[in-house]
Image (cartoon, rainbow, N blue to C red; front, side, top):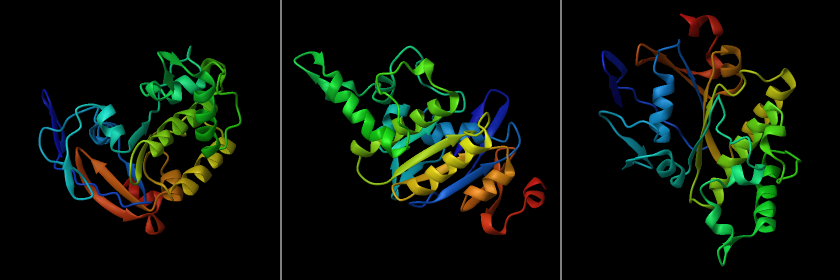
Length: 231
């Protein structure tokens, strides 16, 4: 894919492939094009040239909602949950119609469905709790549960994009998140963006290194070292 903004060539023919169940690490300095590439995969930004393909067939996402309908979800670094809504309302935001009967939302049915998603990320909380009361780590897991809710709405494998998910987590919380990602790869592939190269090496199968809008290296994580990636 290619992407330009006024005066800046952000992505210069970037190719990236994700296999089912694979964890891809994406690294590069600020301005390398990582965020733009993630947003293109997620439908938040449209490329100027090139294609996004799923199972070999080109797709065109006009919005993140289009991407979500194809099983692609994103967990943002800054988080996208709405603080004054409940956990269950956040999980099913935009997809509440499945719980509406005769014009009325069936809250008990929504809560039951939310508990199914929360169990996937091992989070034992009240689905009716207001989201602002959660810790940052809990909100991060709710974000992941929200993406995993796509499983019941789409066919095939999910692709989950993780944008700097560990930036403010403790060591114990990071270990929990990484354990979940490894378990979830049975049903999803992941693209993991981080400036922490040791974490990228520990979690990923393959690592794409971006520099000035181009892929300068693709490494098997088992062969990668922090020092070689930094070069």
